[in-house]
Image 1 (tube, rainbow over the protein chains, first blue to last red):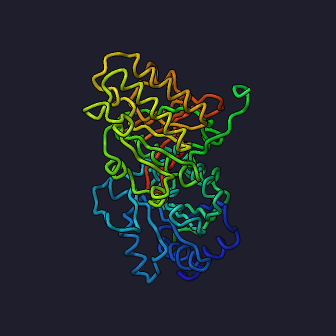
Image 2: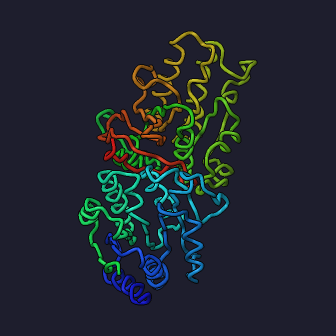
Image 3: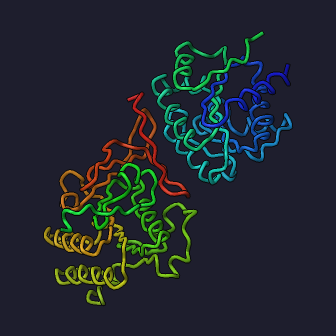
Length: 193
Length: 240
């Protein structure tokens, strides 16, 4: 099952190519399989750097989880929108993590992605938004759709791979509709068992 | 003829700003960059000068309050700041006193003669060193203690004329009121940097209020001051 989801993610993304905004909808139980598929199978297979926007849990936690899964995190850079808001620990000395004050400052998220893209000097990159559900806790749908539109447009021009993660159990109908509107493809990765 | 000709653009090198301005500032313009403290005026002005020097345009930064080294230290350490530009004379930092030829004991202009000399010497320097970009940071502080309103106006007119004739593009960093100040009236362009409070977040914003001979957006943009320079993105309106 694990290998299936991970391989399916990598295969679907390989099929769509760059500059195509993809929303991945999947059950909570597949979360780590999806991450493995994205970061390990797809990004490393394509030799992409990864910019990982996290709004659900701190970047340090995601990074530790990936390392626990024995996934190489060398080429992953994080935009952490949650640690500062919850006054969590922040690794200021780390070159891997950039902090944004809160998940409500969506413009700053776009600017940090732009900054990291410049730091990568135009190298091909996968940009993961984890997740639309957690961003929807802090922002209304209009704001989110505008954010994704601006983010995706900028990334498409850079031939990046924008991927928006969406947990099915937490997905409100209006957010699902919005994803259909702003993303080029919404990929359904199965239902909760 | 010169007045009717389409002026070339001075590419600021600040990607987002050039995009807003349709390619850059009209060459020979004097642009006021104004806003409250801490919004990024000096960062933007320095990037303009450094990027220009890197593109082969001799740039002069005139500091009026801080020593040049302190001014440089106060902005993000730009990745693109090549110190060899200073050694080659492409990028020069000077202080106010360097233009007064010792005529003022305090090192600051005090009399109308001092101000005339300052204007003349800056113009002369621009001509003799083929300066194509000038930054004055900050303009208002030159006039501390000066009651006569005609002095800042006259210096501004002198600078404006020099910039136009010499095809030198200038940025005046100031905290002038963009609606009423003489600087915003005389300047060819006005860029306002500010803070926008939304819920409990504070965003740094940029808005081009005026740029002569330019069809430009007058919308507010959000900026970030980074080691890659000033980055710009549209202000999201959904929640406003």
